[in-house]
Length: 315
Length: 179
Image 1 (cartoon, rainbow over the protein chains, first blue to last red):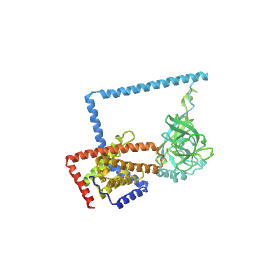
Image 2: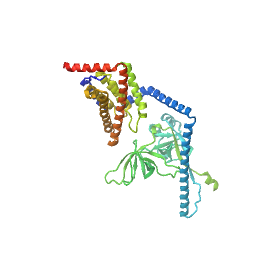
Image 3: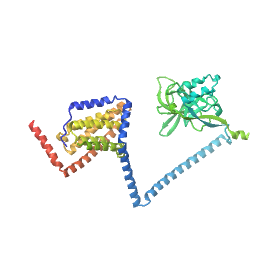
Image 4: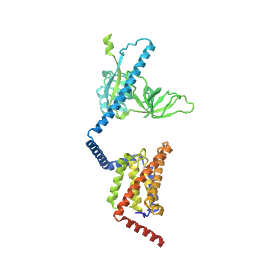
């Protein structure tokens, strides 16, 4: 056991060289190898986790058997204490908010009468039309883009990256209306037909939208400078007009700036992947990785503003 | 070493590294079960067999590591080479000497791995934190190695281990006299 004759030096050297050469292996090969190793170890891993879980269950059962209900009671007591603390904190915050509101009203001096908004937001769900399905439409004269918009129906079909939706004027969709998927901005409506519409993605050249930075810090999210998000036809977007005095860091969130569409919270454009500030430049040069993935889009929501029926009723 | 035992040992150690090592962590220091297992394996699998085992273990360890492939192969091969070269020296022949050697080799191996990780990933590394984690991991792993080796020696005593060990030493002396 203690006498360990060494391997031949040439073998050691060859193994080391092999290790060094492996560093240059392509990433796809490395990923494949990692996946294979994990697959190989998965049964053992599952069994080991099963054993650990069984041991934990056994220990819990023994503890429960020795002192019936004590562990659950302790757990519930801890939860109750934590909930009580949370309620107290929320009560304090509510009281503080009430006080601030009252103070603001006093300072303002005039009573505020709440009113209903004139417009309220409405999301229209639409499905993306695949290339093959979209190819069927022109033959049946269904696409009604109109020459006024300067878009030929064939142009919609042949471009493989075009996002064509199955809702158009009939669903109340109009040009420039923003398109979302969940809380992520996809783009806006570029061209409309009777039953279909085309989306200009945030990455498309010509896309422009007001955007705002959100810094993530230990104290939570904080709004930063405002700028304009522009698509340039690549996989990333540019965030323009952010002054050099603003704080920008890689990983900052980029969200919509204006909420006059009526949505209660900003929607997400993406994440800052590079931020450069050259000497004496007045503005940052920022690249944004969009949160939306055009190739995975299936269903989207188009935001439109409709007249508030309450206002119509009251008048 | 029988192939079946080799396979069982390898599989067990890698499954434990994947499942138990993170749970055994004290602070940021988790034991490096692969290196501990490899040193225990190399003690029984000498020469070319040991080196080939190191390559195989390195390849498997590369499969568990997010770093660029080849680093763990390099670490395992160098640690094995160091073990094979120095274990037979008087200073490192006993249990405590073995622990010292294991500790030094693991320290060097993990330092190399961390260096490649920092260099390859282009990530700025806080040297103090990295050194603390490295030292903690090495101490933890060496302690484990010592514990298992002690248990192994105790088991070996019960099964006539000391006789084998004495014989091994006398063979060494004889070979030295014959030179």
